[in-house]
Image (cartoon, rainbow, N blue to C red; front, side, top):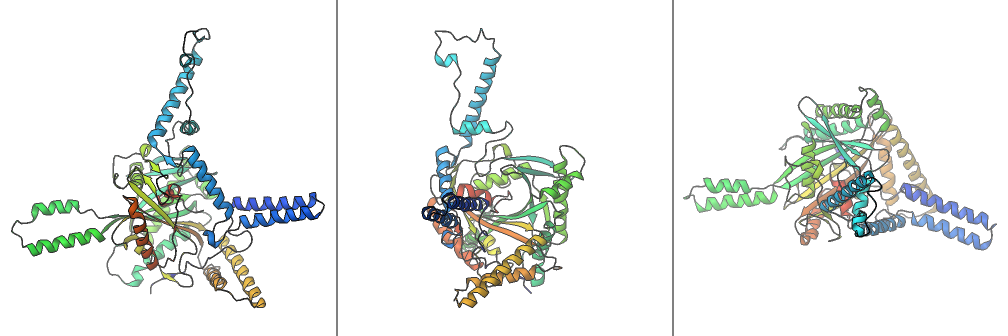
Length: 546
């Protein structure tokens, strides 16, 4: 029997603080504290009471996520606008690797010249009265690019704002293969990621029970990663789909078709080739393991041989154990660790698929980042002045509520888009230990039951939102019962597509939204004005959970 899963039902947050981010909570607490201070300062006078009430109400309303703002608060929207203005002022909405490299070289030349001047004896440094100002003292280079180069370490390469501080180290995975471990230092504490190329089950006609085996196996892999002893905190499932290029086949065919072949036969095969070119795709699938459970990672590091490579040895050991278990549970057929050259080719291809092949062996991580321009259009980010990439995400309330979907339904987003288009699908899972997930489920269930009882006593007629949310929390409570072996997960789903002209953006967006509807997705939110930052969520970097 086909397995089903219910993902919809989370229309809004529960309680006063639920749904607010940490900055929004801080802003709310500051507003409430300020209102209390005004009350005490005015000794309960009318003017100060009104001012305190205004501050309290304003702090609550501005930090409250609302459905009309796509689950975001007014404070978050205005903060994002201010951030975009800052990007425009500093020029970080356009990343040009050539410009960044020139700024770094200018700064390096200035620092070298300054060091030479400091080593020169003082008498020889006395400026000549007839010398020009430029000859007397080396001018310090200016500009935001120079400041960014000054903040970077000498070993770090220029990277877009969406990437930030990220470094890579290639380590042995086994006797034959090597693995690249990425270190992300944008947040404190840092976390690590590793990429694996995976092969799924074979296609064709199979029985329903056999078809569900990979999904059951993937659930077991997530459950293993969710244990408190596991250093893995996130598992990202990433798929890249590219239309099939039949140019080589046509070239071969032109040399082997007999000159006296029947016209109807040649025309029929030509129509078949054109139909295949429109529908056929090439797919690559990857898993990204993110190591963000610091306590478990530190225990794994302690078990390794002390030294500078202990953290990488611990990551390799954890990753090898998890990926081997995935093969054992038949979640995947096989896997291959991604080394630095493979990772560079993949990242370059995801930015500009018209210039770089996904298997380009000549790429390196030192020059992988391309020119990204967010100023040309708000509907996409322009890469190398020829590739337009648009990114969307599926909100928590984006799936059809009140109905369970087959676990195979998301396949249509991978291989069901006709005509074929270059696109990516990224699903990030942040695993949560059963005890923590169960406590959250109990809290949500209690809140929903109290809300439902209060509405019943008041005779309030609901539009069905509370009923759907209550059913969702009841289902989670039943799934997370002690002894079930189930754990919790927070998920983030993203997809993107790339076209060669701005005129194609809206047409392809409509095409993808139509396919998403067939998958049980009611709503996609396109990240307009944010595509240059959101591009990182559709890359195998283990990011995307907000």
